[in-house]
Image (cartoon, rainbow over all chains, first blue to last red):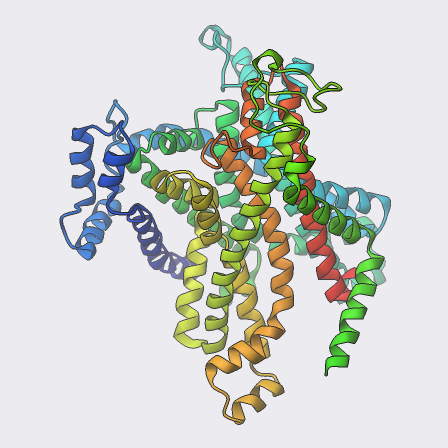
Length: 324
Length: 284
């Protein structure tokens, strides 16, 4: 296991390099230099900001030296300071928001798993039944539903029409005066719609995947054996089949991370949640390059770590991976 | 040979036609195409005609889907929005498919370090939350319909590359390819004339599904104000107005989203239908 872990960590190094290379390229995509672009196209860029940009990108030096310098700063997670009037370090800004985004995404992931796994298992077990057909329709909707439209519909129905749930922010105005339980209640009410929305978006893919994986497993000989030796159907399905069918789903979880993190831009900006996505949206609108780059690198890092965790989880439950 | 091709096509059609969902997808896709092409004749009003006496009117006889904050007819704006969505969808997928074909073909055909390098590149691109990457590039280049098409294309080729690579890997060992090579066909000829035509069917499926994905991304960008810029109507930017007026004008939020849902779903149904018609084993 340790050897496997070391191998995986070592493999992350070139990936990290690649991530920085792509992010670096993105800054240099601008026709001319980013500084010129900002000064000619953006009246908001002050002289000071121009100087700051030139410093950050070191544009007077040859490209490979620029990249090397940039890389050195990245190694210490130094993304520079934000262009916003407060001029705070990019990392601080991300730090105070990353927790909110991660916990919301974790909540959605838990809901996705809790619903998609039983749904997929049942759909596969009773393939072509009405339940299977109903979930198939749901899945087609899930794949075609624009996430922001879903958010708007949730707001329209639960927020405006029924007036049950708050539609923006993370807490109410009087939050600081609440007792502990009121605070918990308030927070839950505020995150319900965004979390449900994000969960629905992930549900379609995951349940379809679970169904496919389960169908595959049910055909295996050891399932026939388990049935033949007289095990109750419940044990066969939930113990023998489901556990094995879950394995590829673990990998799928890792792969669904970039989508969830990317989706947080949409959900957080609609529901006015002060997370990484909203920060990123603001940074893009204000052309706050250091912040945009910082978030881009951190977002990719999160994905990388998520994939690593998924693979480790996979290796933990499947000894064949560790040996290979 | 020609006759055999004909047979395969007929079988494909026979299977496709039996699939009701796929057929409805095809009809909807065609219908949406007609709407986009004929929008000047279909739209009841000029989509940019501002009528400040008719601001935020709910759906009625004169404005079937209501009006927006400037009194513009929502139905007409949705009809014209189809142009933007389909244009972005097709061009972006075209770019993505071309890059994917090239990368996948080179990786699958040459193998070795070429394959290693290109596939690591694919892994890398998959690391980025796509929306983050797209938004970052838009932040640098500025929002415009052309930039959006290019950026969606540049961030969407990885799936096609993997697909084509897998096809090439299995095809290049087949007898007809080995025979062509023995006859002295060049690498380029082998790839272009022998491997590519045989790898195209799965690419077709992924391109159809890709149009659906690109339409979703475009509408998300326009919704966030970083896509197609007003006054050009796009489904996404009508929804932005819907969000800002959500407590008073539900029709601004409801109908454009429905248009996106229906369009995306019909491309998905069409793509799945083609997939199943090509490979009947999938149909069970």
